[in-house]
Image 1 (cartoon, helix red, strand yellow):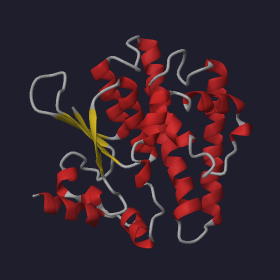
Image 2: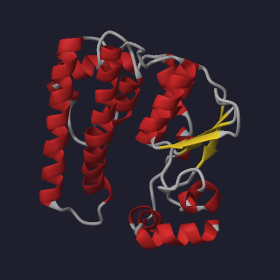
Image 3: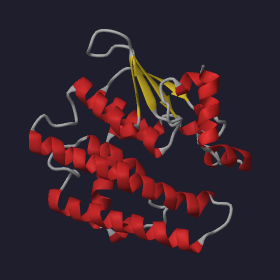
Image 4: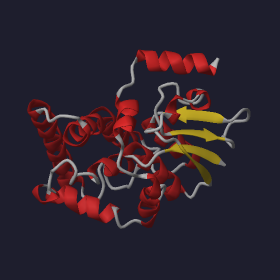
Length: 238
């Protein structure tokens, strides 16, 4: 059994999709990030960065204690190794998939997150920030559209992989980012096809009832974190 510490966000969806695709038994443990549950000592013990998702595998491949993993990209790789699925064993294909996973982790995810923050959550509109991050996300969509024009059905080649699962949840929010997919035909084709996968639909549906508009107080909790927040959590965990 795998414990999935989760909240329905793009990074959370990556892992719920992967678990559903692999058919692994798991237990969903909600971590309400608007209520500050990511600072609880028991969560800090498995995710020292105070971020979800995180997993605890109670039946790892190697003998010994349960294995905990934080950071969504690392979790995807762990689950792919555990199951032998969605991550090629061939050198060239494996690193093609890894490159696009890292592209999402280092580029599409952070830039989309900042774009969404300044468009949706910021208490006041900052035109420079909206333009800066909007332009960068638009550029990244263009990069992905070009890649899909070359590869066809999937991001990193012929096979559906953890790279596709990592990228899709961020592209799914394109309307919130005010980027119409009509401008990116290959990306739209890929997005629409993956959204038809039953496991993707199940993964995206996990915890749907938990998604509610955030209050001002919840925004302060979520966006007001500093080193002091981390130190306070560490003190509680001792």
